[in-house]
Length: 319
Image: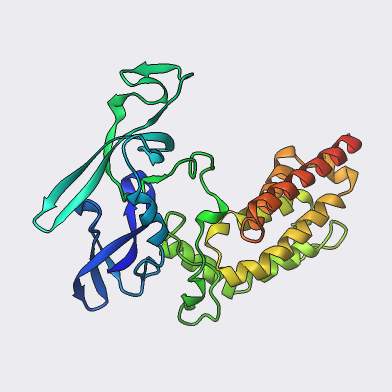
């Protein structure tokens, strides 16, 4: 038995589950997810980051799932978003001679006295029984109540970078700058482009450019380092923040954050008047993205709000 990522691609939802290796062909393994339907079974490379020691990823969540019963409240994923949901029924379904799955009938709604809709069970908020769905109790589409519905599309603690150090550089390269992450990016072409950019000195060049001020002759002709150019550069740098390799982003991001904060706080009044509000917002958003890999959510949100207030006051004084 092993722990492995179970990936429901049609719902853009994945998570760790327990599986049995039932076939081995060289480095290719076939996994049988004993607690889910057969369509969840998959082939995987034995060296993949999506496989781990048995119960190293699933022990806690599987203990929780064993406690679920009728009327338990959960977060459940429909075809697009997470919903506050209720388990309406539970049953065992035999799917082969040696395999049965525990299923939960999920109602994508929560019953409460002040609910605006009602059915035979009472008042509720959410979707009607027309959208009820049977799911495996162990499906990644079922999670602890409020663990997903109180979050945005991506939260800092959704990212697991424990195995980043195991990824080796491409042939002819000396360092890894980006790594594949399930549900973030697994495009080999995009990852190769970032790693090539880094190994060719691209990240270092961007850092050197950002260190310049507007009065200094630009390192790249035709690109004076005003807030507009800063916004363009750091936005492109921060967009793939989730897939940067842990050691690299821990070393590189603080330098980018420090430079961007200094540039905003020291910006001349003329620069603030000339730059579009959207560009300043993009710089702050980029700082926030990098901070997701560096500090806690609470600390990051506090620093971001303080910076927004500082910049807003500066813009008011310059107008």
